[in-house]
Image (cartoon, rainbow, N blue to C red):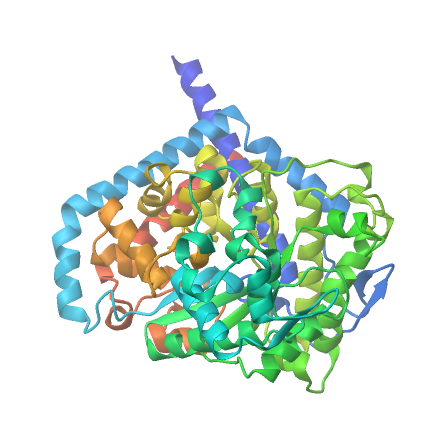
Length: 576
């Protein structure tokens, strides 16, 4: 019996050391890329410059070394090893179950007290606290009804406008005649942008839902910023949405907009579009989403190497970051808060011996693995952040889609490299990763209505479990065009979640506060919405603005503090 107890004690100690080492690895990547709290301590003290060698940016006069590809894969191998380690899985499972049980006990004891505190310490309610939609794709940020109304309006007002040049010039009216559609017959069912049973586990079919009436040409005309009409239609509907958001004091959005890496001037075309149509707003920030399409472009002969793909995405951003002057791109980058990596995670990764080599050597037609994309995008973000920090400019967060589908080790890559992630539902399959994400408080923007149409039925979504355990999660909409029916998709997301999972006002307000903290709006803006939220490196809470009761906030802080104390106790005993 004593021997069994000693073995169990030893397993716990080894498990704790694995966890602490994993947390230290993440801190290293966050510190080097300046994505962590207190990044100012690690920022260059004088302006640094970066030059490109074989398409790879290298900082000339900075002492901080960014991990190499070989180092990254070595660290990733360690993380992927421990997430399948039996004793560690059991240990993390028990800790997560304990967190779940502790929250249920807290609610049984303090639910009424939390309600009373909300009534007495705040003049706000769930509807008036600020909520940020931290994961929403701009080109599908309107619902289907709104897009249909906009299309009908353009057909009535400007049917003779030339909107496309192919074998000849086509007017808007002629485009619809070509697909046998008349104004009086247009409806939401034929628009066919809502996801349905046909899209479940079929990402290819989901992608076709971006095409109004199943016609890629209409997607180009209405939902692209680089087309024959210079993106005017997309700008018009964007202005309408911005006006509506600005009317709501409680709503802010971070919009994802795509650049593809086909040509280096893409980002300049985008920034010129923003400037031309005056789409700047204090309520909106942008993040650049990069589809993992290298293999497609290489197959068409549009690019030759992966290094060229990266240069097309990051080259001009790096130049503008080093430029002390002001131009359209520099102004646009002031409102850009992050970089996203998007595509179907379920696509099978093809491993290649070139993965640990320089990106200029990847000239094969195969699309690189998820990990390869993650490392090289992280590396470029780290370089750009060090340059921008040395010049007093805003920084970028690496915030990819991860854990929506596909392999568990995608979440291991994100754990090392990413400030926040989108989706993360696959964490339910790994107690080790889930516990690491909890301990690191990595922001997770979850979209249950999106998952319900694509990969996981609503009743099986881990959101309520993650919330009880204290993971740093919030609700976001992803693609209102495909998944939502009302003019306020974020409120729709909260409403459905609250009804199905029995969330009450305190829960809703805590999730809303998380959304502000996860977002990358400037600190001054966040403090205006939720009050002072940090003191001496620790989170604080202003219940008069967040409507999160002091009892709930104290509980969350106590839980994570006790978890770290528990881990350090075992680590200390081990060292003895």
